[in-house]
Image 1 (cartoon, rainbow, N blue to C red):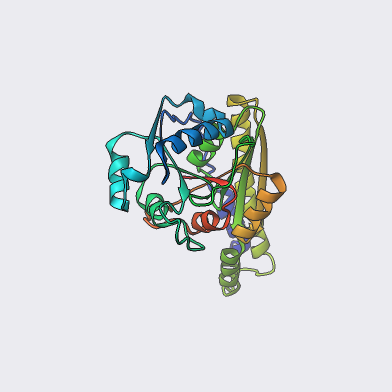
Image 2: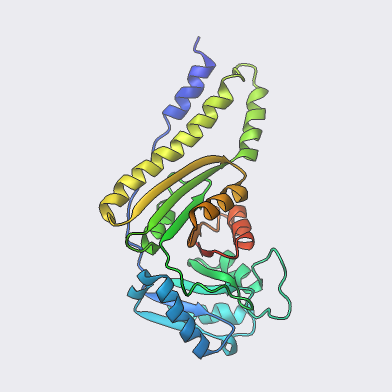
Length: 284
């Protein structure tokens, strides 16, 4: 009769490791959405290009300013009129009189939930923007709780980081979810609960690190002028991400906004978006 622990280990060892596929991310058309004037939008574009020089390859910039929309539906209609690869905006558009805490504002809320295109969220809010005029986007951090197989997330990281910059590939296992698994394992008499939780934790972290190592090896061939770092840990997502951002002086944070097959915004991405307003975010 086979040992349940051996079967438990074999299940994880047999898991197929998905290879990483590098792809250049095309960003040819950019739409900048503000609640200011056209002149202010033009000035903001120049600041963005100084901060993110790799966006200079975009051939077309389109401005949607305060007089172009007055409702969410009007904004969505405007966005649908022309092709765009990236939307750039602030939190709390058209909300200068009342800015609720722990929210993105009604416009950005809808954009991130019903719009399929990536959204670059600039630091601060529309009413109180945080200057990035003297910064260069040379510290890019990709964050997720499931990095294995997430090619798009990593490819956007490679797309946005400047030459000689650093890309951090970060995976944080949710300790709350892990403790739930651990509790369930403890109720299965055939499994040695003194061994299984540790094996599970080690394997989860190893799978993430193995995939990151594969990604870095490929990225070094495609963009050798960029530095690559990794961080794999277990803990509270927001606390871990906040600590990583502060310790590495991150300029741009990249995260997924939706779980596959769901319309609602990914809980991690939403928490990151409303808590870390001083950092530029690319929400995919």
